[in-house]
Amino acid sequence: MTRFFKHLGKALIIGGMIYFVFMAIFFFMGKFDQGFSYARAWEEFYVNMIFTVILYMVNAYWIEFLLVKYKHQFYQIKRLLLGIIGNIVLSVAGIFVSRSIVSVGIKEISISEFLLGERLEYYKVSLLLAIFISLIFYVAWYFKFRQESKVKEQKIIAGTASAKFDALKNQLDPHFLFNSLNVLTSLIEEAPEKAQKFTTSLSKVYRYVLEQKNKDLVSVDEELAFAKTYVRLLIMRFEGSIVFDIPEKTGNPEARIIPLSLQLLLENAVKHNIVTQNRPLKIRVYEENGMLCVTNNLQEKQVVRKSSGVGLRNIQQRYSILSTREVQIEKSSSQFTVRLPVLTQKQHGIETHESFMQDKRYRKAKEKVEAIKGFYGNLLAYCLVIPVLGWLNYSTSNFPWAIFPAVGWGFGVAVHGMEVFGYNPILGRSWEERKIQEYMDDENF
Image (cartoon, rainbow, N blue to C red; front, side):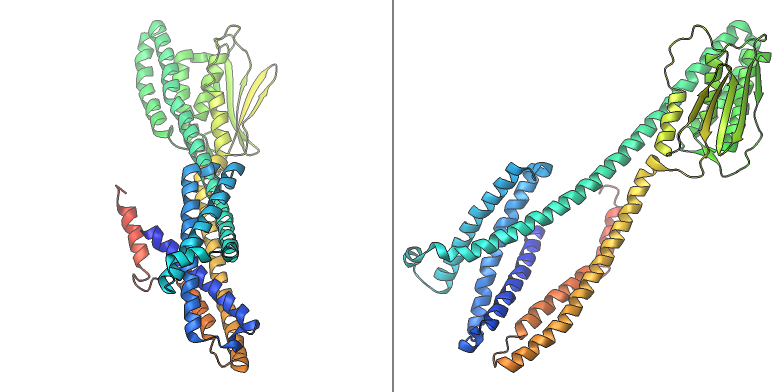
């Protein structure tokens, strides 16, 4: 019902505009000097409204039916042809109904006389107007369709990035636990007394993993502190076979990196290299040119099981979502280095939703400004044109035809202003805001 009244309102506005255009044409053609009366003006007005409302309604509901049925496939050639043919057929039927209402209902002509007097030329002007209005519909809906498609695309991008990022973060939990249990199993076999200490330290480390794995970014200082804790676990396992050089703190307290990235790099270094007292693994962590670098001497194991790719690839993929800066990997014959970009804020994909909302607010603000500009342009044109029309009316005719554009256009300007500034004379300015807040507060909505 709301949609019906919305369409009805638009039909009445369009009907009024068409009427005033024709009145202006009649004036310049000198029709007002040929006995054009108030009664004739009102008759022309409601006849015009009957035609406009019926033609608008049948075409509007036909196009809406096609949009609902075919959705994003609506603007294919065969759908458009179907729509245009349907518009023509419905417009002819609408013109016939409108003429029958005017002739039989208003002019009291008999049905048989009406049918016998029908001619094809009676339909030409109305049909052209109906087709013109339909084209306006198609163009307006096309731009609306494109805008909605862009918004939907941005939502999909945001949702995909968030889902992918969550999936990558969820890999960390079982990956860390699996590798830690492997270390614990080795300790139980080699040094049961160390296994107990390892279990205690592991619980602390695992608590950090659970706390940090769902975060997008963590401070570098937190990661360095955690790396030192994790290093103690590795020392229990390898004793004097690993040498670590890790700074206490970073030079920038605002610096951020991917959570658990240091732990994954330390773990991969141990996993893929020989670690013995005769060939100790040396790992160094340092800052350089806005990057947090992790370097180890390269002494690869001869036989290594195929990597699952969760470690280093996980870091690369998470950085690709968070930032345009890439993880740098350098490998020489004697050294392996990974450089992690140090970030100060979330960038790129993970902020797709925030960027989308910011862009949406910008678009809404821009649309609001454009709407206000349009209203003031409409008001200015009204203030300039109506006095000129009034002067022309006063100078050329005794019939006060200028009242029609003044009232009709004035009503349109008033409605335009209420729409732009969100004022409803019946419900008040704050009603919409109250209802929006009410629905936002309703958890079941």
